[in-house]
Amino acid sequence: MFTVKIAVEPEAQDELIAELWEAGTLGVTEGPGEVEAWFESEDAAARFGKAEPAPTIDWVTKIQDEWPALEVGEKFFVVPPWNTDPTPAGRFRLEINPGNQCGTGQHPCTQKCLAAMEQHIRPGDRVLDVGSGSGILSIAAQMLGAGNVIACDIDLETARVVPFFQGSVDAVKSNSFDVVVANISEDVLGPLLPDLERVAKVRILSGFQNDEGEWTCVVR
Image (cartoon, rainbow, N blue to C red; front, side, top):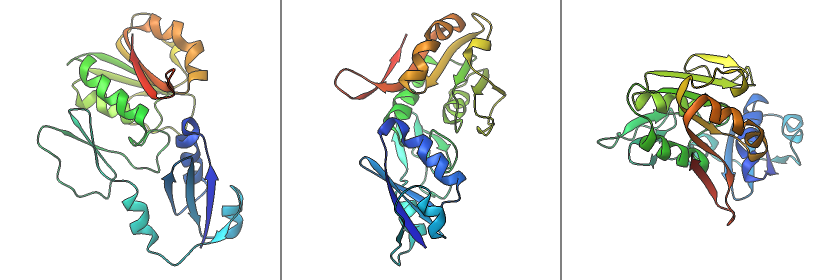
């Protein structure tokens, strides 16, 4: 078994993790400014950097320890599939496989989106999830009582947890949703702002940093 450590900017970390799983990694752990991945073969690991023989460890336990259960906001309990911790009273159990696309619940932007959704999604709302990735925000919207949740992403391999179309918000009719959520990079988000404002009266936007360099979420 071989391991490779890869330096990565925070905004690209989810995308890299998804790429590693698609390449057949046996597991991934996250650290400050880097991720570490394990592969059966040296060639597979070397695709991402300098491959080193992996020490003899219980890597399954190590990987699972890197994905603890998280209480997010006031209503969510985000867990990987193997977690057996009881769900705290009053919280929704939001189960997401870390190997699925972008959006594991560990990133501050995802957590801030979930907390904002608690405050702004009302029972029966129509919700559009733009750049849905793993579908974590779509699932959360359903748990919060949204009456109709639609997801879209340019990646066809995106998780299909709710009705889905390949594409983006520019294909959506004006005023057709109550809330739109978009947790995507600032470079992608900027050009979409006019369409995001056009399709929904409430916009929950994240995936970028404020002037102090902190990950943030805004509601417009």
